[in-house]
Length: 113
Ligand code: 5GP
Ligand code: ZN
Image (tube, rainbow, N blue to C red; front, side, top):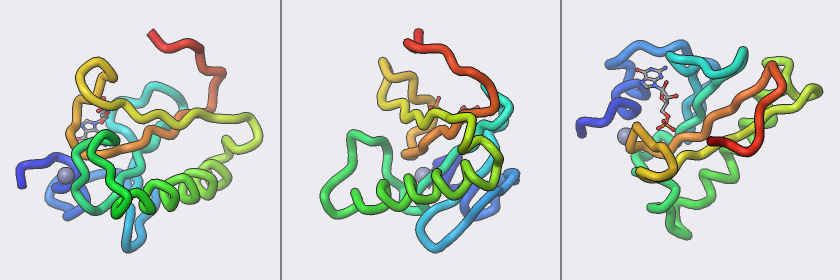
């Protein structure tokens, strides 16, 4: 399948990995929007949050567990952080493989643009 993040999971495109297990892969965003900007993705190709079903939803819970672990390891747990999922065109999704942004290391603005 011609999917950038599937290629990153398979190692066909290099990435700066921060975590991997049998279900998920996490790596530094190539264009960081904050001092810490990690992407956490399921290894299964799920096109977006809108494509989630009861069957594959448990991986999202697992991803949030990984978020908490990485936030601690990356030193942003205490200061706080944001987890973002952009879904679809209006949501600003540019890569059609479900991913969660973990952003931290500075005070983040709200609301988003
Ligand atoms: P989206 O806009 O879909 O929510 O997020 C896609 C993210 O993937 C963007 O923050 C973008 O910088 C990141 N990205 C796009 N291509 C690559 C790549 O080849 N490597 C890495 N590490 N990040 C990428
Ligand atoms: Zn994919």
